[in-house]
Length: 114
Length: 113
Image (tube, rainbow over all chains, first blue to last red; front, side, top):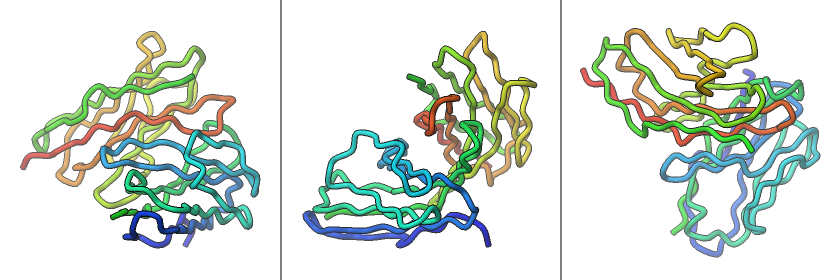
């Protein structure tokens, strides 16, 4: 099956803990993204990687760090989570063909910070 | 910088009725435009996308959208809504030199039986 896979589906943690989310795509794409979707459904890009290189880094707190081992994987680590980090984190991938190419999304990881 | 406005946060429609969701973009050039749908507890799925060319674009599940450069719009339509269309719909823009999608706030569609 070719798609974008995310783990875990859901994670509950306490303020100050570290969390890590995984994303893998089997579509053969070169570019991967992390988006944050807040409680009002607002979607904002956080990071983008092309073939393991960071190409987009929006203004996000320094406690967020993306990690890419190869072009099929892009993980997200959050050191010392805060309550405002509660959100759904969506991973996406795309061919490096151009801006017209479709981004394919994973099902998301829902984070709740108590 | 590019931006997208979806003026309707929520639309309620009866099953079988027609649907139009509005989207306006801001960008001085010609953008690439997308409509995505998000069903409850799921990721985003592409409905359709626009490249420069025919202004009317056909998508999946009976959706279509019409691009208007003069109005800077990319409205989504469906002739007859089904209960399964209950979801949040996002309009998004991508520009030639860009590497990211910029999304509108989304329009939640509620379908009455």
